[in-house]
Length: 274
Ligand SMILES: *Cc1c(COP(=O)(O)O)cnc(C)c1O
Image 1 (tube, helix red, strand yellow):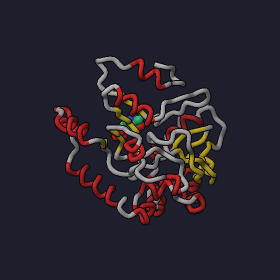
Image 2: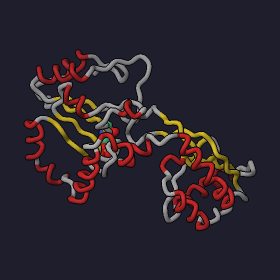
Image 3: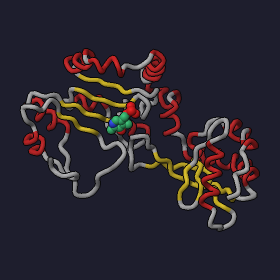
């Protein structure tokens, strides 16, 4: 129906047949469509679905339960809004912006949730007690919005001030340079955090970190950086960087235990010479 970049109410109306059981809209969690675009807003979609006698399901992917804009972050649609606009079923993840354990959440009208509950697949896909306990603990933090940014690690790290991260980079850079300095140049630098994980694909947050480059401009530099990245990942507490523009970038936004980070550096195996 329509095209990949432009869809209109008519496309949905024309696509409905007696065999249609559901209209589903999936949020563009990890890509953006820019330029000559048109989408059908959710209220209009709900009206089309209900007129056709079928439910509207919206898969939000991430789905933030709080207004991220009030924390100075980019906006992400919420399950509450989707329901208010007439969706019968809304699905979202427990472990993306919600900040809880890996789990899929289904919310919606009593009638739809009742049907899902009775379906045999529901039993096959039901979650474990440990996941439920972790999810409950995460959701309980939302009862106290005033302390959420402090107590929910996901939100705490997303709202971590750039200055604080820059100071952290300043403090740990010498230790990293001592460990890998023979072969690599370690520089503190402003970097950009990608929120990722199926949310806000086009948005980045100003952050700070270490940018590690090869001392020599040898051809093998790419492989040396790969080897260093692999040995960092193999540390007792894995350190995960990304390689871009000929450098290994360690964004320090998510580093909270500075002592442990520095303390395990001597365990960094000397990357194999390639
Ligand atoms: C992430 C994502 C999912 C899957 O959610 P998980 O609970 O993480 O498996 C589904 N749909 C969309 C649009 C997503 O972004």
